[in-house]
Structures are given as C-alpha cells and as structure tokens.
Picture 1: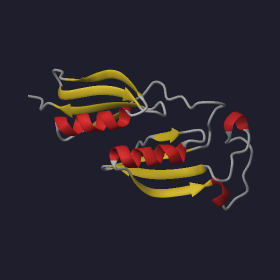
Picture 2 (picture 1 turned 45 degrees about the vertical axis):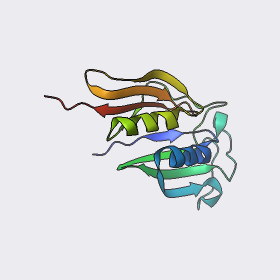
Picture 3 (picture 1 turned 90 degrees about the vertical axis):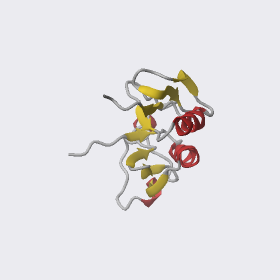
Picture 4 (picture 1 turned 90 degrees about the horizontal axis):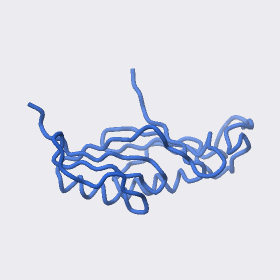
Length: 144
C-alpha cells in the first residue's frame, strides 16, 4: 500500500511547481494540462463546480528527494486553496540544510514556528509557504 500527497492549487499549480523546483530542487516527472485530456471534460472539476481553463494543470507529479508528490488545479474552490489539518514534513541531512530549506519555503510565506532546537531535533521549524501549504522542516536527533 502507498499513501501519497495530492495538492490542489486552484489555478496556481504551475507556479507552485516552479516554486518547489527552485526552493527544494523538485523534479517534474509528469505534467498534463486540461486541454491535453483525451476524453471530453465534464463540469465539476473547476472552481465552484465549473469548467477549468485548458492551460491549467490537470495532473502533475514531481519528486522532492525520494518522495513523489502529485498536484492539480482541479477540484478547487472559489478563491484561495486551503490546506488545513496537515503538514508535509521535510527531513534535512544537516542543520544548515534545514535552515536553507526553511528559508526557501518561507519566501513569501508565513513562519508558524521559528527554526529551533528541540529534544527530538537539532533543527525544527514550521512554515506555511506562499500557497498556504504547511511544512515541518526537521533535522532529527538520533533516538536512543
């Protein structure tokens, strides 16, 4: 069994993927626009259940390190997408890398918990990126 994150960006998917390329080194493995759909579109995937512009992203997959994340402009709501009740956790190999990733994700976003040391991590912080996706960045301490 495999559980994967699927993020809905309501018209900002391509912008988000480009942000993750720059901030995290994300590698796009697949991207399909709504206009490339081989089957006729039905109403319901767009904001408020309406149609979506053909240039918007129907489905994309990208890798951040070893993790595949999927994304789309579909199934959005009217207005700004909301990412509530979860965070993506990003494990860094060093404190310096954790600081760099935290700063990159926070560009245009909002710090939810500043980067700090904890009993479980030499570096840990929480930040919502400019798209509203919450991230926990961690360099964990070895557990005894």
